Length: 368
Image (cartoon, rainbow, N blue to C red; front, top):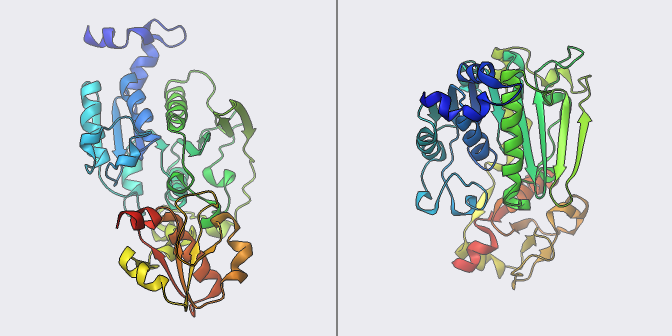
């Protein structure tokens, strides 16, 4: 009787009813990422009655998450997202089974995590994980519901599900080659409207339910984009021909486990970039042999009072000639863009340059 009452609006829904609800109860979904996209995806799938849900996230809750990750509250800052999410979702619907995995998705664990679920939902925010996830789902033949957000615009697509012509497209059909670090800013650097991930995450949950129950027409082989500023939306066909170099795509699970996705997506070059703290920066700012490069946009405040060269990250590639000293310190607002820029400069100018970036950015400098 409790189950009938909980899902009564689904039972009453024409074209859904008891049969679709029972199908949800027998289904399982793995959600990768419990952040801006993951929060609405998890809340709606749990409320809908998916029988088994897995949550993969290594991160902890930060204060700047709360502008859009509405599953969490201020008192939970510092706690693991996956653990907090699982605890709250069990209260929302104690009838389903929820497993949390407080870990990174990696080549070592991806197959073991994914193969036990019917559908995978991509709520990640970096290209290395997206390519790993896309390749793993392709090799395991698992439906993958993709979502992405940028400032005011979001994207949704369904991969590894056959369209009307029987063709299955994958993440690599949409993005054959990983973009450069300069072309792939995330919400930490570009900002995001707080309600946007709620909109896109809800669409991802909808696509998941459609796949599992057979209702409607999922976005297989199609990419939907929507801009919240004017509600412009497009649905584009994903090319059926795979234009990526075949050598870049793992052909087996064994090859997948040997692929270095951090290196393939250019993230590995950022891991060993030297960081300096505020006190070190102040000392280096007085050194005439050091060039300070501010990669923030020109309208971002507060402006630096130290001698420096402003080169926005978006214009860095065509302005490398301005860098005329061997010692370079890169700064931005929070330290994320500066790390990316430092890696790019070192890659282009070579190891003879001593490149570092300001940890915590200008905001950390203000608080020091």
